[in-house]
Length: 161
Image 1 (spheres, rainbow, N blue to C red):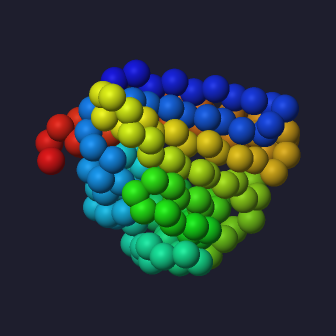
Image 2 (cartoon, rainbow, N blue to C red):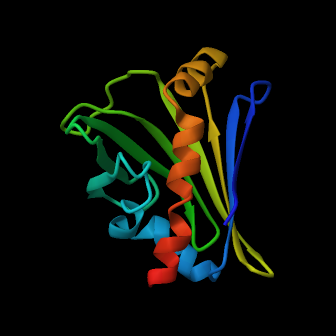
């Protein structure tokens, strides 16, 4: 599986794309099932745990990623729209330990799409940023590499199920 990322400062986006050898329905379960989602949302050394997951428009999610030294970074999502099994739009940000938005680095958006292709499904995640400064800060934190590593885990999960 090949995972690509492309940053557009002009459009304030980071686009991550992967072609997966699995059906649209199977790949959709990777975002609709929190136990499957936490197996890939985050790089291998920073796995995610979803403690709240209201998978419906305007629903909320709270998760944390835990590093190898035990450090936890909390995040929140708001589900903007869900079009099963093709598209999911979320707002995403850093949170405090209770899952409430902390305001650190503002809010990002993500449009996650699933497109049937001959080999299976093309997954595309377009992360949007509020400003060039926010995009640069997230890049400094390693978001590009983190997304590549996170999405790079998906085919293995699909192969197991």
